[in-house]
Length: 593
Image (cartoon, rainbow, N blue to C red):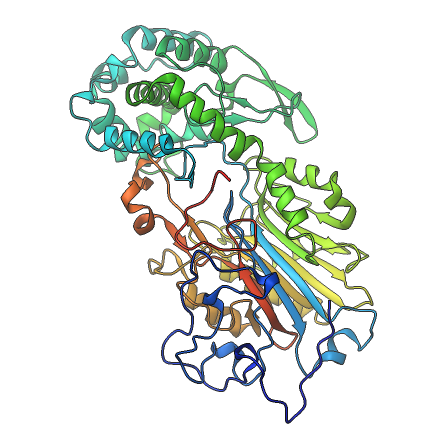
């Protein structure tokens, strides 16, 4: 790391990067990033982060009236997850002695990365992926799309797929083994006569009642205490590796999984044996108002029946649009790359590409990844800090990694609970594991607050969380300097009152005396995420056709690194969706590379 000195009064800029900018342009001064640009180490920063040479006097407002020494390193990696951002900060010109006490024992610059790595997605088919080497993937997904959008004579009654014999066996098991009420009335008067696509898979009422998605959420993939490998429900949309080449084989395996085999589940500090059907929870009308009072009373057997029908339709559909050997072989390849190898792939990128970072903030991190990193070479060079209150059910946690040579003390104190106590409302939508805030000291003694945060889907917690962090610092840690890496879940075209607008978010962090790796005024079209759901997941209302991935997918500017405006200035920045410090625009992720 180099110690940067302020320029002399009479110095002139030698490159476009070093110009003094005094005004804000009337139009954005960024350009899209071409697919073949973007190696920051070679000095070839993606063009979207440079001033447009066609515009005069240009610079984001956050950089006005100060020398721009480069572009801050935010590396947003979106390989198999959501986003990494890497930021390189230099002490702000004129404050070299103030922040670090003017000692040579402390670094002049910090390299900071943030990445929502996303806890392992148990469904390899859930999102459209970039799979350049196998045209059979897009062929399969297009056939599924056609089956569900234009079923024609394939839209047969449910009872042709999930048969009368299957229902009779299921109802008998639910009443005799589980002790639940029979749902034969629902079957005879409604479900068996529905058509599998238009009246079941695409019924928005079933979706709003969570009758198929709720049992899938709970039993899709279950972590067990006596194995490193999870146990998967026999279905298309998870890592289940059994034979699903016909409905008979699926049904035998499904019944055994749901009602027979006890699994060893770790709950708090104890291990308990549970059969999957006992894990299901009633669906409450108070939370899902679409469900009727009668359905709420019968929600355990009713959701189990709907879950069985849903899985049966998926198996039937896959074996209709593709040969079993073809789609099951493709699924195995995807599971190996996207699921089973995700932890080592992610760890390798952190170690080999971003191991030079001083601070890494991660979001949606599984507990298994935390333990893996601590036991790896990364654990030798980084303090790997997880929340005291880990999220045991969703298994999605915010994590902070501090370079041991830069922050030898590691975490001094976790202050997450103090941040939550500072919320101005009890309705802030955060869960255990979403926030991690700690105090630490850089080599030489300057104190910092470092925070990592994953916002709720709509981003409505993002502003309240930042406000609470700043309030906590101002009241209790006023001599500390903030570094905050987060997936803000902000939107370019937010629905007013329902989603967090990115430009409004920019105004908010500036009002707190902060700026970001993107400056005071974020560019709404500077996307750091691009994913789109397929038709192979329980919420078909969120599915995107292949031709609509860009239009209807989640393509938004979400990832940020915040810091005190008077503390640092940006040296360089980049985003990354390849794991090679490059960002390819309009590439959906995850990728299979």
